[in-house]
Length: 176
Image 1 (cartoon, rainbow, N blue to C red):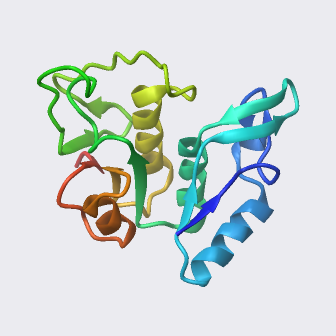
Image 2 (cartoon, rainbow, N blue to C red):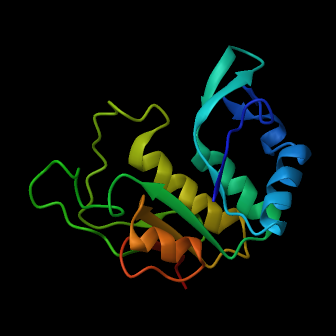
């Protein structure tokens, strides 16, 4: 795996990707890493923004574009918890949701899930934004069969990055 920072290759206009697409050179660089057998790991970071000079671009947003551009079979979102939980992990009784279905409009089938988040450690939108990006991967990248949300450093993360459905974590799939 190799970490890929967006700046200076990816810029924004009012916190949105220029032309709603990744620059060709960024995609070309990622494709080159893949051809060398490396797993590119994208993350949120500061980027140059044409309106406000600097903005934070979530790695989740450019994951959507990379999956579409590269014809990915799966996408892996790595977090600091085991996957999507029924409530914040600090609350008693938080349970892992193993599967979330996404309909043709991007609506998620989520029962009994609290989207409350204090936002103290995530300036890019928290769980709700991550789930929307995961749904967008399934909507905009037709080759993607599943999106996995797994804990960093876990066996599930290793499995997912190898293209194997992980034994734990949360899997998002298209509703049939």
